Image 1 (tube, helix red, strand yellow):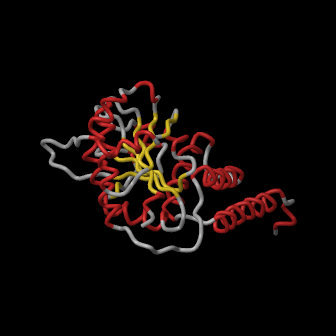
Image 2 (cartoon, one colour):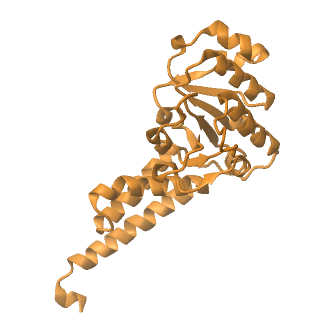
Length: 248
């Protein structure tokens, strides 16, 4: 596992000390890239450093963004951690070890992989989950299911660390920003042939984006998929536009 390609994203964290604990959890497992949805000036630098201890360098190098989408644009996988299931939270939630397996394939191929954690009190909102491409859940007792933010980060980072290896698949998977172009091409083609109503486009794009991100596509594979959908839509449109006598 190339741990340099693992990114931890904290969405709207409230407590500065929790960020410090997250830094320490990351350092324990050799993961150094921290991105935060928020503003650096909203957090108490001293409180972060008190709990980060010798991992304060992770805080110093942390990068800040306005949204999860921006924070993961250069990643190939964005996994949102959640304990709640629902229509907008993906039908299947991976266990930490299952996600680590996906992460290994992508990270060893040179792609960035993001594990996204929500606010300490509310977790990820439905809208924030939709910004991710897969869901990950950490099983816990029903009587006390909520995990401390740094504990959740520690568990995910540990499972990734366990997958550490030197293997490589020899190609660079797509970023989510590039993958969005492929999902748009698929949706455009399906819309042209009347596969779904305009109101269903968003769900269709989310479906293909999530499925394709788990496949860790190369540029060549994405281009081939786009070619297939464009050609299929073109063929169907030409057949539809032919005079009736030509179709017999």
